[in-house]
Image (cartoon, rainbow, N blue to C red):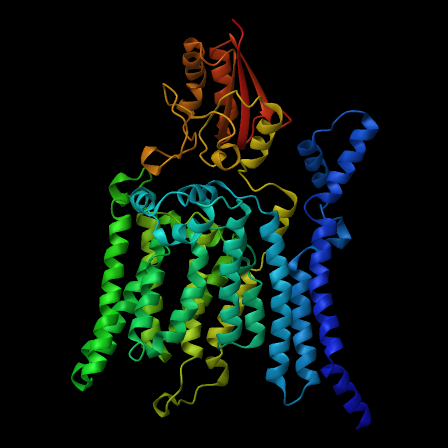
Length: 593
């Protein structure tokens, strides 16, 4: 007995908790700092440059390093990814539960707390090494405007004001652009904290969900409005059964969720109709005067929020430069798998069967949860194949959140005598088992590793850094990227490419067209545009173009443009290799006449 008491005393000691927490947090932190961010590769390239007596092309040598071995030095690669963190969390939870018989809940809270601390570190590193891309910086630009102009821009963006309003206090008052990622990380952390503290799931399922790619990378690192959806969904799931008692709170959550993204309107509509029928129409005669007023007040909030949402995005269906007319594209449905990394046919079959099993079980156990979940999934599917496809990772993974919401409703439901059935206990575990399957399918820690060793594609910061360092500040730059304003705005003349006479770039609204050179014809007209600029005599004999070349034919198209105007000299300054590839380019055009 003394030996058992001694072991229990060790398990209960504060020092053990501190040691375990330090180990769990320090492993990914040390691995990321020592092996990540390309530090090893950069050190070797710098050393090679000193030996060679000239600066080596870092981009070329990184590719060579990665062609001969893993950037994390082969055998040490497990230390550099969240694999080891999740493994430690699962095994540590098992040890804590086994070492505390009769005190499993306390052991689970301790294990979840330690895992959450490690998760904060891993996601924080993902944010710190992520390079914001076009859409993220585009939102940052809009958030610098006043409330009235931001509202008007929603009519071209097809998004809602809520995300831009959250960013506005920072963007409009000169905060550094890295705070954009901090906002996304904080909201993601708040959502995960809610799931860890309030989610009615077993501890192991919470750990698997925590380390799935949406919460490990998509939401914290890629700062988009989708990050607002999980915390609002979890709050809504906790209020769903109490909508009648807390109608205003419930409807406020519906309004906020409706203002996250158009893909969520199906769930919001289903929950709203459910509230009207279940909590107002059917029990109307039995409600007191006070209850009627509160529920009607909640309904009024929901209606007002819905009208405000329609006012913001309805104009985009006719004014936005993006396709908004309904067209059937069934192949778009595959984006829900391909964009989330589920690319092999066997894994897609597993995912689809798990969805069907979860919905079938929901239909049997809880008709309300089935209606809300199935309507929201069907709406997203129809919106994707008819109007706007789910090509972005944050958008494609929304089905996973719906199934977490669905499982939350099922597992948090208080059983009554009428629910009693001779079902095998395993049947009642179907919601959490399907969540475990989905989480394992979406366990893709390599996404974090990419940002640690590469600029996020297509990154506008590196060519802007090159311009700042090597191009005279008085020389204008012609570009398609309004995101360049984040790094070059106010420092030099910046003009919109393809506008003639050149317009000073302020912000490229979606009403003026997509801010990328997607069409081959635009590239073929490149030299013609340069000729017009040279003819004015206002821009000297050298022009600088910061452009995004998206597809494989871009190189051929640019070569055709060069061949058509031999009097001009084209030099690719960025990338440093001078080659044409998919991504951002800084091209210098000189007039040889």
